Image (cartoon, rainbow, N blue to C red; front, side, top):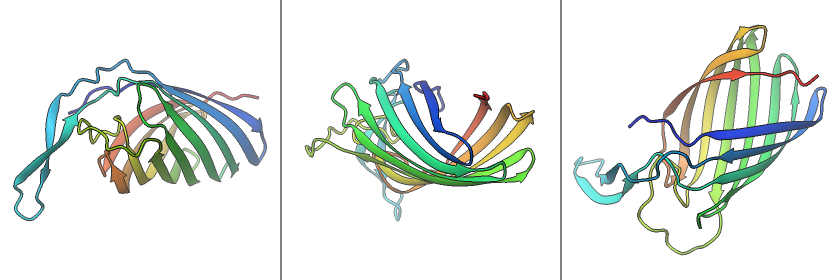
Length: 194
């Protein structure tokens, strides 16, 4: 199932510049895509390939707002970067809030090609009551937690302002989230704040 997901709008404010950076980011995900169940999904026995119990429903939208402030600290030059961040995802609609942290490093292999390796953990917090079996492996429903990694290649199209890229992601621990691999394509625009 491939469909557009709930849009995310974010803003990052740099507090320190130069090689060392400190910034604050605020992201908001808007529930504009339907959160209705499209189809059930089931446990599959890896040995026999028999269909087991129903685990939940495939969904694209969450039906709730996510508001996520983050603080970020890092070091960067034109050749590479290293950074870490910590945030808290506030979720409406009775969904569990979540703690998120990230660590990443990147290197410019060519004037137009930049690669980034990233690890990230999202850990749902809140009620310890069992969650209803209406979740989705898309990671948009209540109680999603994971420890994941990604590899990203970014290609600069013109004068360091517009770029396209590909991201490959996977997870070593996950609840109410598919383990991957997940492939994403993107286009990005950079604004110079100077």
